[in-house]
Length: 241
Image 1 (cartoon, helix red, strand yellow):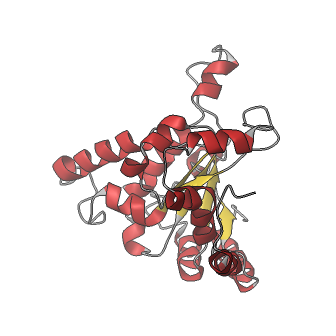
Image 2 (tube, one colour):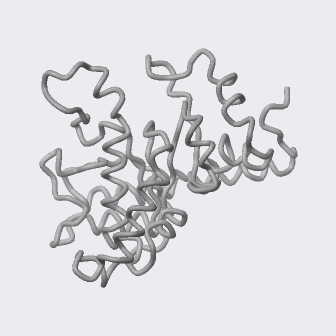
């Protein structure tokens, strides 16, 4: 999307929605790009958010889409940053849950790519505690009208490719909020063993949960109606040969 102009972005959202495209890429932390944050008091991004809300367009944010990857210092080894790749997703998700935009735009949905999911339960627990105890002085009482964990389950998708712990916590995350990726072909992925690892890590889930995580939730997120109808007609089983 044209990040430099939210009105042009809104027009592009509507143009693509007319073609059946219901996803757009956005910056996880636009302030890192020198752009207004999603909290901007002048409502800089509101035309864009309104267009996404109207057209069922999911706002997708990939790690690093704020053009600044997390680390601890300029001289920390690359492995430190690689371990912390989820952190920007974490910061961004808290931004959104406490922004009030899900109150203003009740159909708005966001998704995080390559951020994994194991960190989500604690963040929801912490955000709920802050909302419950501190919202009166925390600047959110008049715009975040329900617990952040409820907003998460209505509006947010997490994405994983190698997160056994996250899948063990799926009841705390929400089986309708988890999607799968292989992240082919770069080094931080499960390729060429993606299918094997996905099967191993989802072994503790029900067949319905496996379908949701590996396929069904993505179909819902992207409004792929033809695929949903075809799956239903075929009685699809995720790992059938």
